[in-house]
Length: 275
Image (cartoon, rainbow, N blue to C red):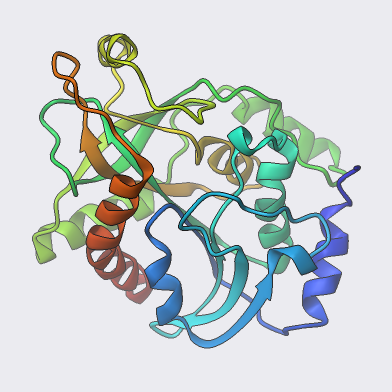
C-alpha cells in the first residue's frame, strides 16, 4: 500500500483539532505515562490517521495526543513504529513530517536502550551526542522541496553533530539542579527485534557505543532534515555483562521505563518551562 502524502494526514488532523503544537514528543517503551499528564487532551488513534501505521510493540498506546504541559502546546506520539515491525523508513518517519506541517519547532524523542558502557547503571538517562546507524533505509522527506531545501538536505545528510545543542545544555543544567542521573553518550541503532548476543555487545563496546536500541535514529534524522535539531533521551533499562549469562527481556525494559518515567517527566517539564 502506498503511503499518502503527509499533507493528507495534516488536513485530517485539522478536522479534529485546531491545536498549534510548539513541541513534538515521541514516547518509547515504558514511557507512555507522561502522556496521561497532558492537559486539555485530544486523542486520535493512529488507525484513524491517513498514513499512520499500527504499533504492535507492547507498552505502546498507539495514539496521537494534542494538549499542553507547563503551558506549552504539544503533539505527543504515545508509541512509535519500528523497522522490525515490517515498516519502511518512510513509514517510520512519516509522523515527524506530519508534526513539522503542524508547526512544531522542537522535537524530543525518548527510547528504552540497553547499556553497553559498563559505567552506566539501570535507570540512567543518556542524552545523545552522536549515533551509529545500523537501521538502514533512505531518509528523505515526502513533500516537494525547493532548491534551497534540497541543498540543506544534502549538506546535512552525513552530519553527525546535529543533536540539539540548546536543548542538551538545558537538559544537563536541569539534571544538575534536580540531581538526575543524566550523561552524554552515543547510541547504536539496530534493526532488531532480537536482543544482542554477548559477542555483539563486545563488538559494540569496542566501536564506542554507550547504549543500543531499535529506534529513534530515523525520526531524529528526519527531524534534522526538516530543519529541527532533535533531542534524544535514552533510558538505560539493562547493562550488558558479556561475560555473564544475563538475558534481557521486554518485560524488564517496560518495568525500568515505568520506574524512570518520573525522571523523564521532571526533565521534560523543566525543558518546557525554559522555552
